[in-house]
Figure 1 (cartoon, rainbow, N blue to C red):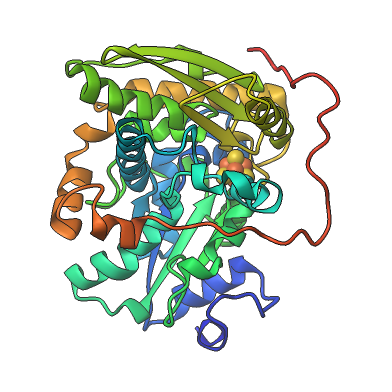
Figure 2 (figure 1 turned 45 degrees about the horizontal axis):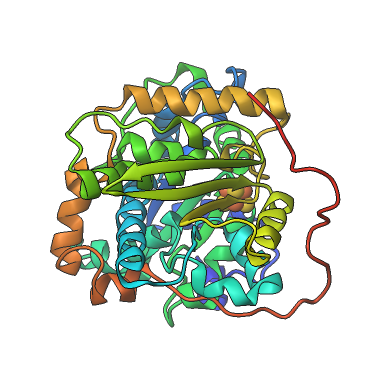
Length: 396
Ligand code: SF4
């Protein structure tokens, strides 16, 4: 719409994001594409009387089509892509003595915290863009070219459990002269509001499936929605690469659960990888202090700012308490069990896209479009999180 033309980042407008999406949908010149994060599907039903954790994927897809989105895609696609790129980055660092531990970088609240308070650790952060931003880049560059759509006519919307993702989408690294890769970010609650505004009776919708090929994801991508999911996906990838483990399932239970800091060892390929999974920035601060004091060592660390990971994000329906989050977590793992594919490398849609658009994974081309860099950020206010108390423990 007109607003987007005047102010591509949306930063100068006070128009609510929901209104911006309606405007794009009603604009006949625009092709409006939507992606949905894993944690949204186990929570959006709560806005319509379903139980927390109850799968609502099919109705959600149907609702998105009814609202008028031209393509309904899944962030699972780029979650699998993120795992592949990030796992190869970890294997590369293990091989060539690169900076360890490798920290995950798909949570923008954690990335910003590191930029503000731990500039010395920025080289440890994975250079991978988050699944949201990989998706935006794919849509605006490669998908647009392949389908003959002008990228300027495409409006890329994402639905996230998260308010920090709105900030991530307007980081200058992800905004081209034409438009941001991801134009508008809606939270789970905002999408529910649109569904209500459209008068759609959510519970009566016939379930539908995502569009191809960017709607395909493995179970390893679904679990990105829970704390420990990124680490477990990486384990599913590297266990094949280092051990040649067969086609079957890989379940990595030490990464799962609501505890503030989880530690695990993975004996693999003749070495033992030391891993940690953290949720909550207070817990991250504690772990970083012990790392910097030389008291502990890890090869890889997953950090998510929200309790329980993205399923407990600030854009999710309320109540968003421990009981509800636990149910959403169960929902996520049952979705993984119901998927036919459990490892990112088995998602042929992703491996084919990597071949076709980039000439394979982890190369100069993927680094241009799927990776990024970080900057020390001036602290306008605030201090590192208080670390006096014990790590927050929320055992399942
Ligand atoms: Fe957003 Fe929270 Fe997930 Fe971080 S952990 S990406 S802040 S929902």
